[in-house]
Image (cartoon, rainbow, N blue to C red; front, side, top):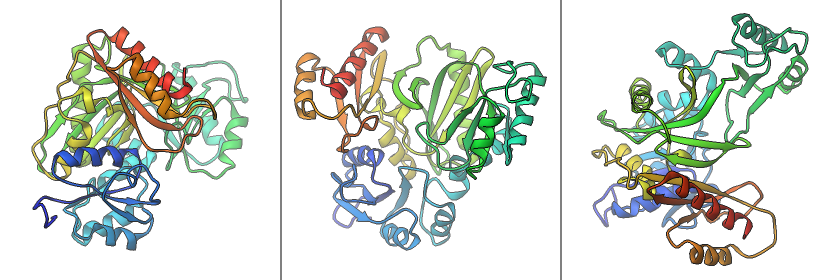
Amino acid sequence: MDTRTGLPVVGMVGGGQLARMTHQASIALGQSLRVLSVSPDDSAALVAADVRIGTHTDLAALREFAKGCDAVTFDHEHVPNGHIAALAAEGVKIYPGAEAIVFAQDKQRMRERLSELGAPVPRWRAVSSAADVVDFAASLAAAGTAVDASAAGGSGAGWPVVAKAVRGGYDGRGVWMLGDAAAAEELVATGTPLIVEEQVPLRRELAALVARSPFGQVAAYPVVETVQRDGICVEVLAPAPGLSEERAVEAQQLAIDLAHALGVVGLLAVELFETDAGIVVNELAMRPHNSGHWTIEGARTSQFEQHLRAVLDYPMGDTSPAAPAVVMANVLGGPAGGMSIDERLHHLFADDPGVRVHLYGKQVRPGRKIGHVTVLGDDMTSVRARAARAARRLQEGE
């Protein structure tokens, strides 16, 4: 408790843009988020008043950071699970707990648990050799539903397959498309623990975002469409265009059921593939998520405030959208040179004063997420075009 205000202190491990935007939400609740940051130059460290410098792998630093916090949470999934369990055993209210977040940290554990729960998942297998991968591809071909039945790698059919690092992958990292046995041999030789999955014949990607409190109250946001390029989310369309009410409710209920079954406290983002046959779970994240950035202006309660409400066991906020169509577009770093980001903002605001801009205070590197823009309106097509134009202007200066 902050003795100056009589209000709770929430600590967030990680100083990236998610912590930065959570800090912004905390201000309206009378708080200043406490941040554990690797560097004083990290996104959240540039704006938060209470910044502690340390690493998420250092248990002593985590213990010191947690002192005086009413709740501790994360802006990434990379804190060692044993450290989370140790803090909880010492009385720290840390959300999500070790027994929940492991399913966002370990893809094999996630697939095993989701399969046990009967959730829709791709066919998958843990592998330790190229022969295992070849055998998996052959099993897909034998089932008669392989995406590509062309002969490859001497296996006969079933390629390509998707390989994923069991731990540590994000934004397209740690994911490989394997087209034959030779590619499998090369990847397995790196020693990376792997699972392999079928390549799902998807129509598009969706995301269902829900929040759950320790009391067990849940709140679900409208299901959104996410657009990926080179493994990075570039657009989020809210609500997902053309999604039937039946399918939307199915996705929301699936996310709610998983939040309860896995014991999640805080936000749970369920990344989904929409196929001709239905929805399939791709990934889980237990923190504020890129697919929910649109909620800052586009929903009655932002995902960042909702996450704070959840970990503090406050009643959940209204998740209804603020406009019929909302589009968030990520701003990626462009090539070096050209006009400054400040000058680009001048041009953007002159061109479209209704665009909302969020810059993360990051050094610009090609392809790096440095911010996002959000546009609200009545027509998804025009709103989407405005958001894409705004993101391009900030990225390229055009």
